[in-house]
Each structure stands twice: as C-alpha cells, then as structure tokens.
Image (cartoon, rainbow, N blue to C red):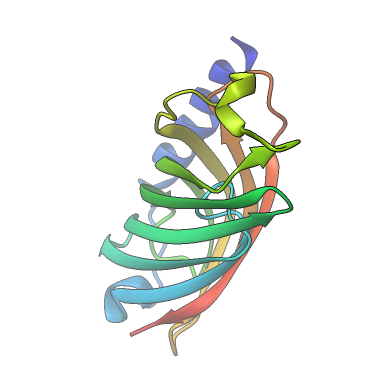
Length: 168
C-alpha cells in the first residue's frame, strides 16, 4: 500500500509540473523519434536493452523496447511498451512512467530440471512497473536518463537504471 501511495504522489507531482509556465526551446518537439540503449532499466529484467521512443508531446513520451538477460540457467528475454510523463519545456526534466513488460524464458533450467518444476514461474504474465527519475534531451537530440524501476509485484526493491541515446 505504501508503494502505491508513493507512486501516486510522484505521478501527481509530475503531472502538476506539466502545467508550469516555463519558456524554453522545445527539444522534445523538434526531435520526436529516438532510439536509446539501457543498462538494467528499460525493459525491466534486461541487461542490456534497446528502445524506440516517440515524443507525442512536450510532456508525453511513448516507448517500446526489447532486452535480454543471460543467466547460467538460460536466457530471459523481455519486451516492453510504456508511457513517460515529463515536465514540458525543460531539457533536464523529472520523469515518471508506467510500463508493461512481457518476460519470456528460453532454456531456463535449475539443477537439470525445467524451471517450472519449482513453480517459480508458471505461465509467465506481463509485469507492470513504474519508473521515476530524470531525463535530459539536448538541442542536438542527445538523450541521457537515470532513475529507478518499481515493479508492481511484492516484495521487490526498486531497480536502478541508466539510458543513453539519440533523438531525431
């Protein structure tokens, strides 16, 4: 319940910051399409990940991505779609996002048995998560982001992430 209250508080903060009257160049509107790589972060359960993004407005970014997480027991693949809310007209902006990640297991075994034999993952379902942090998009389209992902499953600690890419 505390996570939900914290998430709602931060989401409200970000949404309210969208109504501020700040004048600057609209870097996100000048370079709408982007591609960025991530370490940990987007998509969740991936090291590394690659993402496409579209700045639908100065305060709304739509994202989609793909990533892998190799383990000693097999490969975890994840795909994600998400929406990010940013403060308008700011190159360096707070960001809050909602995401849905599909997680696929291939060749995962544990001590020679199929992974599901331990019922750790039976019929994997999409994993929802929020992310909070900061995003910097320069006039030339360079983008750098950092923050934490907070899965909607319990108990799970926030997972830090770092993104870097280019918008066109």
